[in-house]
Image (cartoon, rainbow, N blue to C red; front, side, top):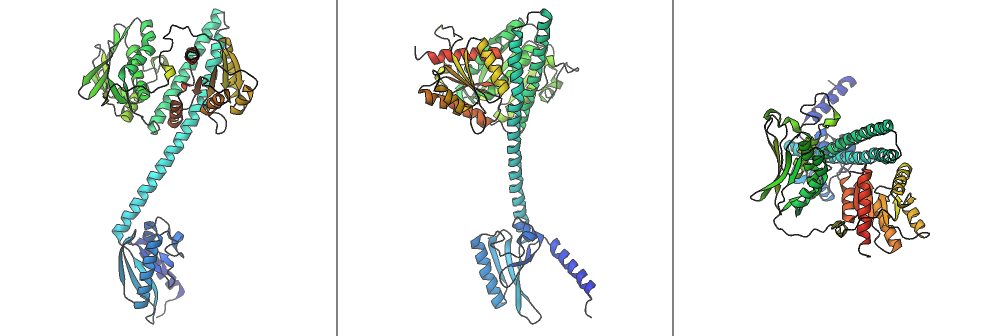
Length: 513
């Protein structure tokens, strides 16, 4: 009995559903070698949807030309002889069987291509894995660009606040106004500290901080820590002792300092009497950098918890003067990124010992290829004079005004410009500057590195340069490191900036003398 229209439609729906549910790839090729219909498994093996490949030749569907030609040759053979053919290793669907499809008269009108279900599943899984990796990489890149832009744009207003606050405090004489100014400074520092910590955590979480290990003397890092924390220890009446090691380690010196800094800061914060010791101990091919303190100590039950985000002991009221609870969380992430295990030994009332394990360098005595200007600042007894002409390159009008006021107050002659073209054009009407202070990220494709180099080219000599930036993008920061210019991170302390400019000017003038 012939089927009525509704019955025929229903039967076709069932056949389509049956074909779609089959895990093995199925396709039907017409007399011209085009894909009449494919099931989802066949299309997925090609990394596409059925609608994307139906009506196309195998080559147009994305199959490599050589494989498409081989299948087409066998399809013609099947259509001519009526005998099925099995192909292996040609398509991502595994074994492919070409079977003739005949009409009521027995004439071959099409060829069915049936693949292997397991191979197709594997191909789909591999394609999904590749796609997932690509999506993750795009997300990481997008997050990195966002964090870089956010870091730069958010640090800018904090830098301006620092500059104008410093200028304001120099003009206040009334004790009540000075007290308000001090409270304002505390607020600025508190906001800046939280911002910096959150951006650091975000960058580490996003995998944007990539260590650049090299061999260097560990005493360089120990000396830097002593210089940074010596005044704080002295202000609290504590001893801060450092024991040099005269050994080279393999690490990223910048990230290692960032790892040690929160540990030392906590040691001084939670120690009321006695002192803090920064020392090293060799263990075969490893070196332990240890921070000992005579502070309040930590209960063993809390040893793991203190490395979690925003976890603080003895600060239930979240008093920001006692920290943010992110320092050791950053230590944990840096430890993982560097591959330097951090351990803790402590008991309440007995002090604490944090130890960072570093690999020793295989060779020793390697020369430091850092900028020659860094060595021996002030070693000849010169007192850096705060005089000279500073060319300031900054595309942010508020920053440019604030830096100009600050430098003039210190006794420098200031030439403010907004970009490279303006800087180079101005050199035609003035003597070469004694120093160039430039923001790293300028308008358009320009960078502070390009700006300083352009000034040097026009002046015909190596004018000392200092880069100021709020950027945290690792590639940008490495470009500054490779340039040899000194780097200041926004927001920067005006006092530290003043000292750095004086040292840079003195070092730049020394060869001429």
